[in-house]
Structures are given as structure tokens and as C-alpha cells.
Amino acid sequence: MSDRSLACDVLVAGSGIGGMSAAVAAAQAGADVLVVEKDMTVGGNARWAGGFDIESDSFGGMRDGNPEGDPDLQRALVHDFPVALDWLRSFGVKLVPDPLSPGRFNYHPHQGLGGIRMFTTLRSRLEADGGRILLGTGLAHLLTGDRGEVVGAVCSGDGGVLRVEAGATILATGSFSRNTEMKVRYFGATGDRTSYYGSRHHDGDGILAALAVGASLSTGVSVSTGGCVFAPPFEPPDDLREFLGGGSGLSEEERRMPEPVPSGVQRLSLRPPIWGDEPSILVNLGGDRYVDESSRYTVIGWATTGQREGLGFCVFDHPLYVEFEETIEVARGWGARIVQADTVEELAARLAAWRATPSYNEGVNPRRLVRTLAEYNLEARGGRLHELWPPRREGGRPINRPPFYAAPVVQGVVDPAGGLRIDSDARVLDRGGRPIEGLFAAGADAGRAYTREHGGLAFGLIFGRRAGGNAARSSSGGG
Ligand SMILES: Cc1cc2nc3c(=O)[nH]c(=O)nc-3n(C[C@H](O)[C@H](O)[C@H](O)COP(=O)(O)OP(=O)(O)OC[C@H]3O[C@@H](n4cnc5c(N)ncnc54)[C@H](O)[C@@H]3O)c2cc1C
Image (tube, rainbow, N blue to C red; front, side, top):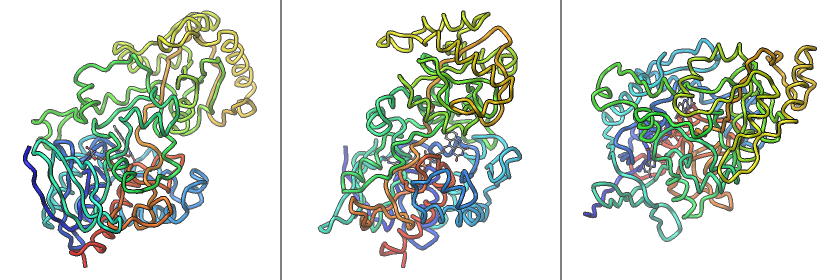
């Protein structure tokens, strides 16, 4: 391994939406920018995502959804959202309003394709302003000066160890959704039961590097966001596994094509029938409902992680099966266990015999499950589902048309709701709430605006842009 060293004004770790927004903004502000990316392609999970939204387009809505969040950051999000979208459009990125979700703007009607295009555009923009990208190179730890200020980082990759001296460093490595130890530490004991789909590099590198130099975490770090997915032993076939594990559903050749077909991305729509106001219910191992099934997908996912064994069971009847038949049968073919029975009592008996894990000795409580369904159907017939506990506010009808089905589900984590504590300039704060000189964070590595909802692409874009501009100003080359 050869050791090399480089110097730049602004070092960015990660080339997803947070990192590339930061890099382009810093280069636009006149800084000499170097991006290090652990993967062999640019774009992170954002390459596979579909569109930007801020969960709520008003400050009040943002506070309702995330009452523990920092009001300054929430104001910044609402204020910057349209500005940041226009900024992206100014480079030629096409953003189309989502006809089904008001306030959401998609890169492209087809997930995957638009992401690749958007990152090709951002990369060209960065390089036109003199920025550089080193692929296959991951930030390992931060370098500090006499006063504890961050003065660069040590990176490593196939090319050996690289020491980078930088006026400012921006962490945007996509957080720790793949790091089981961190998921248990922050999400709780059932964190290791959550599933993950996305880049294989979301190991928490940025957060761990920042904690080692005295950074602090925002409260949202203890909430995992993401909806429910079929529980293991659900085993996607190899081509999808490559996508899931490697962040790549596309061959090298497809990647170079202007319109590749991202089959792996399409298949991620393989979800159990819980979304929206589908007439299914969710019960836990105790046989009880535990969440309003008409809640946002992130609420349902987090509630499931909070159950014993981090497990839920999506229970539905034949009409919903018919609607979702294709999805369910593909999932079943990939190992998802779908329990089926002609009566509710038989379904309950089968679930009682079902074992979540080899270490777990009980199945679902059958008596409770039968009672839960009977109560639910009674209130559904009377139009009183909102009076149940937990209340169901929207959708729902009696689940009474056999055969009956149950699919075990876990949360599929996308990102934690929070990350490193930042201020509204995207500066990372230490445990005393003071900015750590020379250190910024963006994307899922950063937090403090959202505490229960998912910041996603919009948070990455908005605070990436802020991080880049401010890092350029604070470093020598940005003026
Ligand atoms: C399939 C899918 C669909 C999604 N759809 C949506 C959607 O429609 N809307 C939405 O808002 N969100 C969506 N999301 C979530 C969204 O993609 C993320 O919230 C967003 O990408 C987070 O931005 P980021 O920059 O923090 O991370 P990423 O975009 O994932 O980028 C992080 C990058 O850092 C790199 N990295 C990791 N460690 C290091 C290191 N040590 N050094 C250097 N580089 C490193 C990674 O390889 C990666 O390229 C989706 C996610 C997935 C997986």
C-alpha cells in the first residue's frame, strides 16, 4: 500500500445527494473541492430514489410531525426547498411534480434512470468548476489541529492510504443503516431485526469519525425510518441481491446507456399489502393491533421495530390477496412466508405454531388474534374504527372474506431520522453545542430537523447546499 497526500479547500466524503449538493455548491463558491467516494459509482442510495419532498411544506406541519426537532433547521428546510429545486433545475436536472403526492417532485417518471442522469449532470457540473472525485476511496478518520479543529481526513481504498489536508470537511456518507451494531445501539434491542435495502457502504463511517473528534448526535438518531417489508427468510434472487448489497442493479454496460432498465429498483416495490389505506391489519406476537394502519409508512415501520422481536403480521383476506397477488406470489417465491387458512381460527392456530426465530419459543397468541379480528370487524361494520385502540383513522373494512392470509413483516430501514447535530449552517456541533471548526455534515449523516419522519433527498439537497457554500466560505479558497 502506498501512502499519498493531497490538499484541497473542501473535502467531501460521500457522493450521494448530500455530498454532491455540497460539492457542487462549494465549487460554485470558488473552492477547490475533492470528493472521496467509497463505492465505484457516484450517487449512493439517492441514485435509486424517486423524488424530493419535505414531508410537510409548512413550518407548522413540520413541527407537528417532528415536535422535538430544531425550529431553525425546520424553517430553513421550508424556506430553501423551492430554492434548492430551482438550483438543481438550473443545471438541467428535470423535476416533475408527482401526480399522486402533492408537494413531491420526481427526478424522472422511472425510478433509477432519473437518479443516474441527475448524478451525471451534477458530476459534470462539479468537474466543470474544477472539482475532483476519487472513487473507491473511503474516509476512515478525521485529522485535527491543536485547537481540536478538523484539518482534513485520512482515507483508504484500493489505491492505499490517502491523507487529505482540507480547510473544511463535509461528512455525507449516508449514515449507518447497514451497521447492525449501531442499529442496536441507537434503535434498541430489535434494531438487528430490521431489514435494509440500499448501498453496501452505509456503515456509519461519517458519524463514527465525527464522534471520535467530540461531535454530538441529534435525538432523531434513535428512530429508524422506512416502511415494512416481508420478514426474513425472504431471500431475493442473486440479481436483486447484487442490487441490494452492492447498490447496483445495473451492469457496467447498462450504466453507460442513456435509458437502462433498472429491474432491481422495480422489484423493490415488492411490499406487503399495508401501504396507504389497504384494508389489512397489523398485529404483533401478542395477537394485538399496535398501530393505526392508515398512518404514514415510516410510523408503521417504526412501530413494528418497537414490537417484540421487531415483528409484525399483516393480516388480510382474499379480495386484498387478489389485488396484490403478483407481488405476494413473487415474494413467496423468494422465501417470504405467507400463512393461509380458510377460517380465522385456523389462521390463528397456524400463526401460533409459527416461529419468528429459532431463539423464540412462542408463536402469535391465537386467542387474542381471533378476538382482535372480531373486534376490528365489529367496529368496521359500524364505521367506528376510529374508536378502536389504536384507532384507525382512515380506510379499513371488515376482514371477513376467506381464505385469510398473514405475512410476517419487519421494518425496512432507509435512514435514521437524525444524525450528527448540526446548526442551520450545517456545522457539526460538539457535546457543548459549539460548532467544531472545519467540520460540516449533510444528508443522513446530519440531523436535528427531523426526529420522527424521514429527511431523505430533500434534507440532503438543502443542507448539502448549505454545507458546501459555508464550507467554501470558511476555507481559504472560498473567499
Ligand atoms: C431504493 C431507495 C429508494 C428511495 N426513495 C426515496 C425517495 O423517493 N425520496 C426520498 O426522499 N428518499 C428516498 N430514499 C432515501 C434516500 O435515497 C436517502 O435518504 C438519501 O440518499 C440520503 O442521502 P445521503 O447523501 O445521506 O446518502 P446517499 O445518497 O446514500 O450517499 C452516501 C454515499 O456515501 C458513500 N460512503 C459511505 N461511506 C463512505 C466513506 N467512508 N467515505 C466516502 N464515501 C462513503 C456511499 O457509498 C454513498 O455513495 C430511497 C432510498 C432507497 C435505497
